[in-house]
Image 1 (cartoon, rainbow, N blue to C red):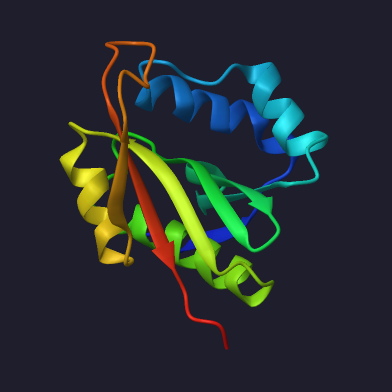
Image 2 (cartoon, rainbow, N blue to C red):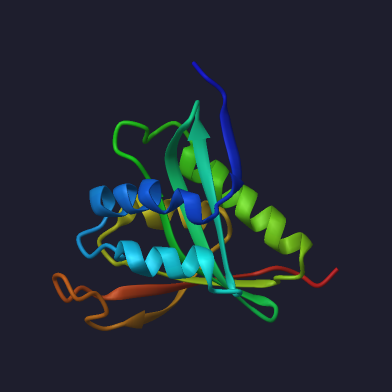
Length: 151
């Protein structure tokens, strides 16, 4: 099997990220929104996972002072259950933690048990609920936080 690489994403990754978005989420971000995130948003930080030359997963984060709001984490169908999501999150947390982020938050669908378990593995815990947060299905979002110690 070809080795996986995780690197910082840039605007040339928009189409690959958009493809994963549409495969993974019922309410995907638009291609233009992703282009804005990767090309113009100074607070956005994205990483992609590549196997060979194929982008197979990604994660995004908004960087606000010492907080990181994780916007999306996704792995392309056919590449799941290979620890790719874990490696993406680990790389993102390591890099942004070295840069001063100490608090992380995200929203996750209440029904997404596998994603919740993944985040819990990294020390995230449910600390709130956003009722009817998701447009598709009007499902609740669980608000998860991770607080790292000051070093």
